[in-house]
Image 1 (spheres, rainbow, N blue to C red):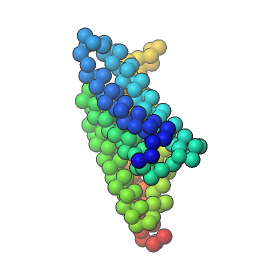
Image 2: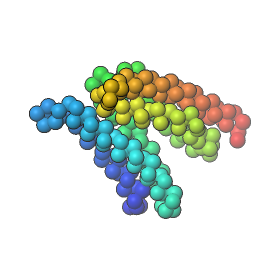
Image 3: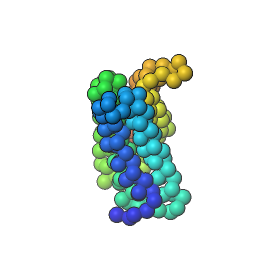
Image 4: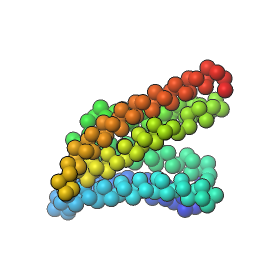
Length: 189
């Protein structure tokens, strides 16, 4: 396991997950609900930034590794799954949305592993719709963690609309990846 800056940022992202989740369950005597929302949002926001930054640094510094390539998507999925589970528990996200998003992540991770073993990993490379889904999902989770209005803007409502859009994009991207994998397996390329 190489110890380099990109991998350390990925480990930081993993360490921020229990902080993001745990702060929302602290007693009101320790932090107000509004403060808990703000802290959870900050922890998730920093974790989301490390997701972008660790990959950028790994490429820029020539510090890519097989371990980093394994750990990065695991950290991403843990971060999103933990946030969704907490948001479902708090009544801020519909369980169906969580099921769709988490189910898709498990399905596509398994598909990518299977396709890699078949030597066809390029057929399930990240697509534009996958990137769009991730962007909508991350912004939605940030808004739903924060939850409180800002300057009269209904942050919770905007977050709820975005998370449903992310769920729809999740289904579209899953169908795309499954179709690409099927095509690659049928053609033998």
